[in-house]
Length: 118
Image (cartoon, rainbow, N blue to C red; front, side, top):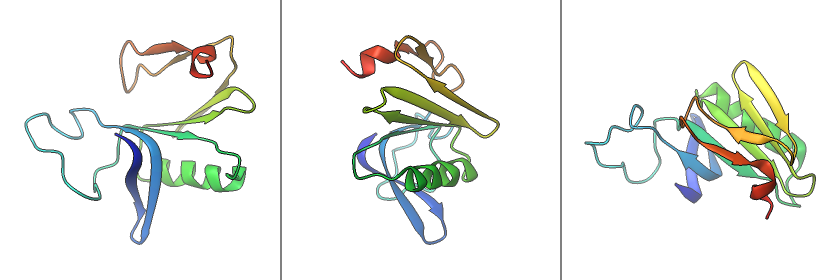
């Protein structure tokens, strides 16, 4: 799912994510995708930092996503040309010479970080 996709991160808090990914484990293939706000946390959330985003606001979102059991949060910074990957027990920052892999949520997914900025 992309742009204007929402994640409920608290009883009265909803966050708008740039990209969401749900595995069939979390949203079974044989069930229709629920309309409106999903009560199931996605496996992956991707946020792209815009010039108006503050780091404090973005990191607050990351923490909220992880608290509701989003498996992986990816934060893309087009200005610094970095990709930050957050998991409940790990954080990684990749530069343009590295490879982004997300085997825990999408086995086989790999893309050179540089390609995200082309």
